[in-house]
Image 1 (cartoon, one colour):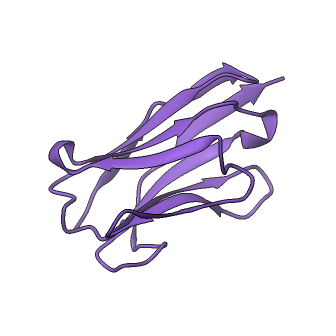
Image 2 (cartoon, one colour; image 1 turned 45 degrees about the horizontal axis):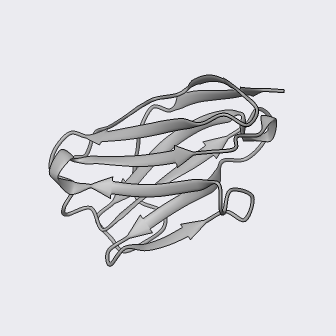
Image 3 (cartoon, rainbow, N blue to C red; image 1 turned 45 degrees about the vertical axis):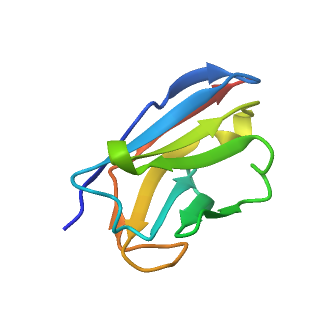
Length: 118
């Protein structure tokens, strides 16, 4: 069983930055896929960014060039650096992980709210 805990969300003005963190309950070295998803009110949950074994990454077109996903296995933590934030980035952001090489894993965090004001 994997437990994931997000942190770092909050309120920021458009153009600002935030860094989200996802801390895992144990070693993440066996988690071959990790990612960030988000869900805005009235919308489906969508992939924001994901990283799989070998360092391969996948970004939503809407965040490419502004967001960067990374992981630090020594700290059992994954990050999402978000720059040049826009009001349309407002959503609950969820950490996701799994033991398979996939952009979508079986385990979810509880979510952290990101609100970008215009």
